[in-house]
Length: 274
Length: 52
Length: 227
Image 1 (spheres, rainbow over the protein chains, first blue to last red):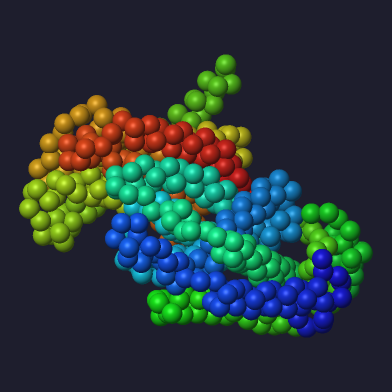
Image 2: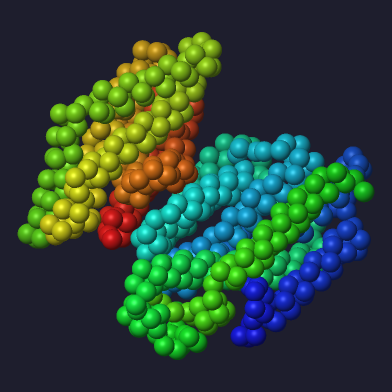
């Protein structure tokens, strides 16, 4: 997707700029779809004839649902990348794991916030302890917030990579368990609260949801890409700083000999696969 | 529009947070790019040097 | 089969060592258990409640006290390896990491069982609960203990060390144990007769959690302590 036509001094490239513009444009279109072209969710009660439904609060779902799906995708990618860290042990997998975890956690926080804001007018409460999705998402957020906290501690990067990978995998494995336990717990309450079943999904609503998914897919792709690049540069910066420090101490050794000694391949284009 | 306040809050917070995060990433990318010399910046799709 | 025997023997050695240290230093008995009882007392003060209300919340309060105290016990267990290069010595001795894990987790488990017994006494005396189904209480308490000990030992290996890492243990461990908290509380609710739920079904969930925690812990512990 991105070519090697990087702009010096930034993490941008022609490809990522294009992606970013398309994502923004898509966001604009989504806004129009969500607020202008689609209507509120209004239904007539069969017996009393009153109007009921989510009314305009449904417009929140065009944001909330796509973000939730992409959050799961990010965490899934993180789990895959964590396996990659443990098996392949290259920096690429590690930076990928960290990036997807961070983007996923941001999305997760937003999912919780938008879900709560949506819930207030529709369910008449900011938080619902018995709701399966809410609880699972909350625990997911806590699990990955812990992962990020671990990542932010400075320690031997090779150890930290593997430890973080284990934490991510345990987190992902824990989720079905959390889901099951909360689902059983919720059965105490008398009624189900499922959003998509309540909603009358007609053509334009469905299209907007799908478009929302596409839009946020682009946004998340851009964010993950940028975060990956930042993470990569961070590693390079540390390596560079260490390398320079060593070189300074042994100033009679040239940098080239030093690189050769610590095993950096001659070819800076890096032909190895991850 | 009904529930307008909630809509503004929800969409607003999301866009602000995502936008702010994007900005932070771009800024951090710029400052890191300044620190790292050209030949070490293999950050694109191509996998980079593996020092392990 | 002799390999399995040796493995179990190794684990037993580690468990025995940890428990011997505890017996001599009395950290769990002298500090962690009183802390747990203190938590129960604090809840009593904070909730300003009568016996009836406390009985209703007893199982939840019990398990929160256990989890908080488990943090201390696990931390202590992990810290044992940090002094005098013990961990390096163990690694180099050829002791399989899984055996180390099993041994340490067993020691923590034993300590947690002691803790649970004392806390149960606290519930009986301070909160006035009545035990309706002692078998359910025993089994669920055991299984939850295994899950907490296993998960705790795994994360303990991670979060021990210098400075900043120590405070990581709670935020890493507690979310992972959320299902155990939910399951154990519901099982105890049934066993103490406070809520009409199927405690044995929840105990099944606890069994699954305990199994997963032990297996994952044994497999992953090696990764976490290696250099």
